[in-house]
Image 1: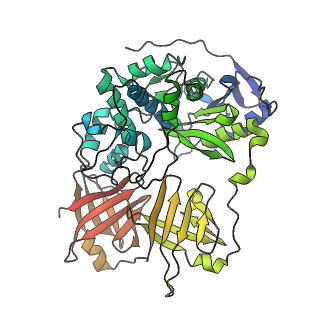
Image 2: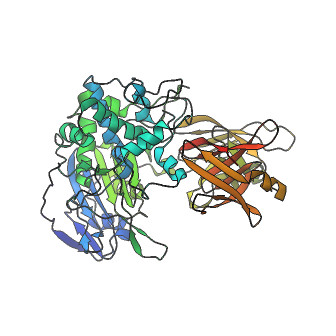
Image 3: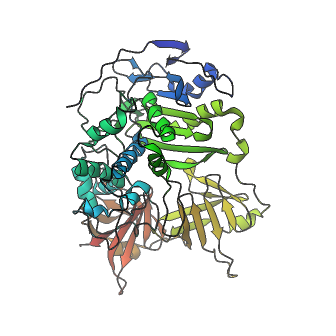
Length: 560
């Protein structure tokens, strides 16, 4: 049984109109004093007295120099957020899980290159071993169990999921997204398995091991794993998001899976942990090295993901960071090693962008070290917009079958639609790139006027082939060929495909389901998913497959 920690309420100082702020400290950074007004302005949208908000903390060379809090932790009781409020930072938690796994390896209890089936014999044999190191770097090919649960009809936050459920779903997957080590695909499964691995090897709960080896040695007195969501946690905020009615509604992670997320902590405790990634007080130099060791693909490509950390740059400054979100909680922890600066942000409002908030705070402290030009679009070449427009249209990711769309925007291309789309500037008549490190290089023109294929690279993948696809306007007979029931043992679900109002709809067992938009022959999309009907040699539709971000080519057999 965990010991409940008791802390006195921190004095709340109303230092700015409409803001609930606490424990302001003066910054003595080399870039000069950062005015409180400038920091408060960053969080201006989160200081309402009748809404949820955020907390943040800043450290220089391991010394906390600023901490502030805004908004309400509990709207029903009108309790404010403070720097001591406990939040969940979502996938920021992954670096703690990687740390536990690496400590176990440094103990000699496991080897990072062990086949995971040594510890999880219930997992299928996929022909090639999945190593513990691949779990850390998201190169295992394992499908994300939560995404599969959503396909089944019970997405996270809709059912009380446990590690038993996560392992059961993972062990039912007869196929991987790809051969182990070939690509990167972000998957919570690998981090839940690490938490379970620690428990199987040590005989301790994951929280007991973490308390003994990480939290207590680093003085993280308000940190624990949410392995029992019913437990009372003092000074915990409630997560909120706006409902369709425009009012605040609670959205809490009522589940017991952890390791992928599920850390209960404060902004100050997060800084204590990230400082250890510089000092190695816990783990020593080899621990630091392994935490920052970036994954390697079979192609020899080094990816940006390390031990639950993204290693890269922000506006010309070396940065090590991770973001996260669970239910309506949001978090971001970033460190700029060359400047001794670290910033943690956590929010209990689902609409918050903690990464943008943390980096805005960091810029105030980094001052002249920031290179604004490094964040701008690559210098665009003088390319005829008409040539760019020739590339616009639909494309198919040849790895997954997923549909993607490129639109022309003058001399630039835009990948995806809406506010989540990405602009890629023309570097030449065939090469386009974004500040985020995504590039697309088109093949040479064939001379027949057809759109060429292309190779796409990202910070975590290389040589991804995308091929142009033509639009699809299915006739009534085309649609009739798809009608039927499709079952997946891996997702334990049956979908019924029906024709309604001249289009296809996908029904679940309750008769609910979305309309499907045709995107290329035999392929339809709904949201971020692509549903592809597959034919036998005689041309009959006998299968379907579903691909989305974290699940590739999940097969369904036609059963009627």
